[in-house]
Length: 71
Image (cartoon, rainbow, N blue to C red; front, side):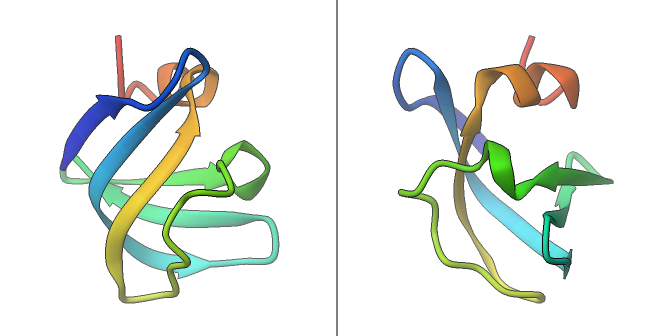
């Protein structure tokens, strides 16, 4: 998994594995742990991913900090 700055409010996270998807969130595998990420915090330029797929997501820095994906 690789985390890069996308813009002043978002980070780009590559190599994200989607374990499960609900109407409002994705359960992703990150750093050996499963983490729920709300779809409301996803940027529209994120890959269109489904369960079992690996790709790149762009999320707000706020939620990335809350989920301890960035410092």
